[in-house]
Image (cartoon, rainbow, N blue to C red):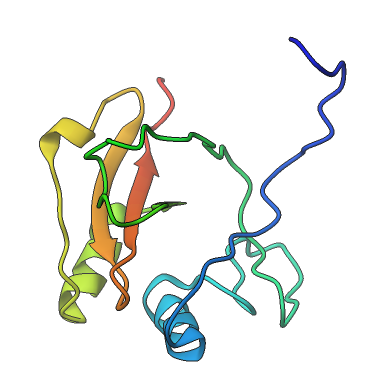
Length: 135
């Protein structure tokens, strides 16, 4: 490792982005993905009105090439959310008339399964169900 001898960063502290209607977008994320202030992803965590208590697990931090076609060229970021039971979530999203994109090439037995949706402001959200550990 170069630069520093210790790793002072221990996790993602927040994701902040601009929105035309922040209140409506926050409500959409809470309603359809149970994400955002006041949501509890970890059932053991204590609720805090202003904080989303996410369940522990891996977080990928990866800048993409400016000419990547993995997500829209006019967007600077794409959210990737770890999920459990992707099929049930996709069924609920379909019932709410939210368009879902899947691509067999995105899935990998060692990494997991993926699907993509977009929020009402056009931001891509990748839903990732991790591969089950080998038995």
